[in-house]
Image 1: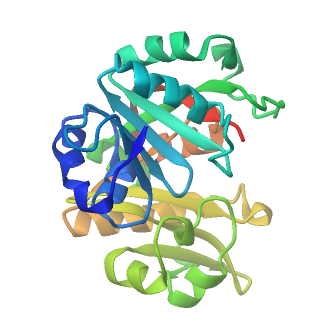
Image 2: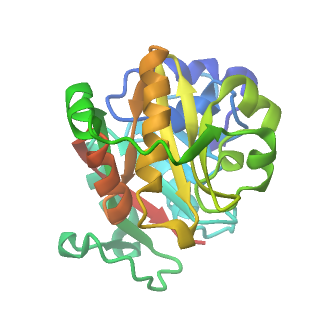
Length: 281
């Protein structure tokens, strides 16, 4: 695996654009919206690509038969040389990479049983790669309109996400993990925050905006969950998309039952179920 210099990222754009799964996080790296990493088999004429987003998502695609690349890939996936400092979540394309990873990883691969799709219990898989499932959704405008036509809570206070909110909001899925700084977010991103009892209870925001697609991130403080706040604030962001010619995008792990169910309440329809590899540290 050779780390590609930023000046050569253009070599990745054409093959990346051909993929038929949600790759907005990878595009945000290649288009230099955030500072991630790109690894290839050859920096002059690459045929295999590994794109890592700083949030901890990665994408592997290209030729599955590059032996030297695959040897180095194994070391990276199991973190043999401690090059990764945090857990990473990997998608691959095309599907043939999944069979190839079984060969490369061997006993290092742990497959999560589909029957446990909503089991979020944690097990120590240090040195192993745990295969989960990630879902890509497509947005159904008519379904969204039908399901939200009676949904109106004018008493709730929803505002544009400010620089102050950007700086102070906490959680696992928050704007500062997807944008370089508050100024970039204000200029190129968008978010809505729901205020309850003087606190930012829930924030829906653009994780990525690439061309006319906006992928939604959502975080609700634990003490405010179960009140429908996420539905409200996501609706505000979806309405922004519809008013500005943007296509809302949603993806989540199958195990994330709250996100999976919320997506469908917002008019998103599951379209692809993709193996999703948890790389431990």
